[in-house]
Amino acid sequence: AQVNENVNGIRDLLSMTLTSIARDGVTLFGLLGVMIYQDPVLSLSSLVIGPPLIYTVVYLMRRVRRITRESVQINSRLIGAMQEATQGIAIVKAFTMEDELSRRIGQLANSAEHRGNKIARVSERLSPISDMLAGLAVTGVIAYSGYRALVLGQPPGAVFSFITALMLAYDPARRLARMQVGMERALVNARMIYEILDLEPQQGDAPEAAEANFTTGEVRFNNVSFRYVEEAPVLQDLSFVAAAGKMTAIVGASGAGKTTLVALLQRFYDVEAGTIEIDGQDISKITKQSLRSSIAYVSQQPYLFEGTIRDNIRYGRLSATDAEIEQAARLAQADGFIRQQPLGYDTPVGENGASLSGGQRQRVSIARAIVRQAPILLLDEATSALDNEAEAKVQEALTHVMEGRTTIVIAHRLSTVVNADHIIVLEQGHLVEQGTHASLMADPHSVYSRFHRVQGRKGLGLVDDGAPIQTPAPGPTQPIETQGIAGSAR
Image 1 (cartoon, rainbow, N blue to C red):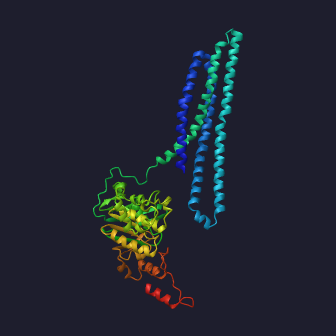
Image 2: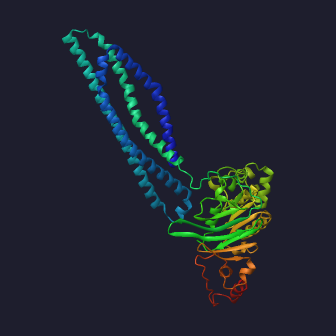
Image 3: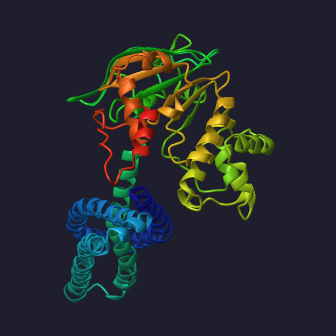
């Protein structure tokens, strides 16, 4: 919203500048030449109004500069609030938030109106001031001309052409003064958009960064530590190896640092201490472009862009053919529902895939990762939005896709990682256990076993505190078969 406001301001700046220079600037300088040619003394005397006019313009520019910045920020918040309310209309209605959101948006609209009116009041102060100064100048010129005609005996006709040029020069001079105040508003927008454009990326490439040259795709975390804020470490001295061509699962309670681990691997953030290596290459010393082009990523919150289903899958690899896109969709169990759409693969998905269900968006996202054909595959709870039947199909498809690729899976449901080659268990940013499903389950007191028992009893994802959930004893409302099922799950 702020960028949109700023771009409109820059557009106005270019429009005003070109119009004023081409029309008013040329006219004003031409008429000033006529005035100086006719009477240099009167020309200098008429320019006495210049200093107070310039002072007024500078003063108003300072006021406009401050108010315009406030106006852009408030208008951006207003547009953002309206977009947020529109996108979340289902939640608004479900929680009967209409009145509260109406009140908030109304307050923002009133603030935007107040700032807009204030800008208009400040900007329009220039007109009466410039009119008054111009009137004084014209009056002075006529009075002096009359004095010369009556006292000095100079004919008055000689000054008529000068007064005509002076009167004609007033309008372009007034418009140029107004343009200067209006230009200051546009310059504020230009400054604000360059404040955004000039932001330095936090994860910039190293000065001598090389292109990635991955062969097997082995990922190694060496004593990695990271925190978003100083007081709350997320990962502490984390070390493990995701073997090349194997599936490594990362499990742990919410807040253990699983998703942060994936973000660090893609260099969305830089590590605080330690190193992350792929095939022995420190990822902080290779270009982000080459690093990320070697990684296919499926997030737990699938994001689709405006365009067709085919376009969204092709974003994984722009050179992919239609046949490769359709093959990726079949592997992701998406081909069936895509062909049921009105235009098949050429069906528009709407803003953020609004025309598709959550599960359908996730399968398109998985197809996008498949078509990328990258040596490293990151799955951040990739099947979280799927029902059991669709999840089983996608898991089967992913089994084929993961062959020969280094795969790192973030999982909450342990059923998705039973067949992993290696399982990493995190707890409060520390690696507490690692091994295969069988070796971790062999210890009934392990954290992994505790997670497995909790999920076996309730069929839920990991609980935040990891504490076992007590199963109530069977009673009149709980048939004995339920206890048997829970026992078998354990």
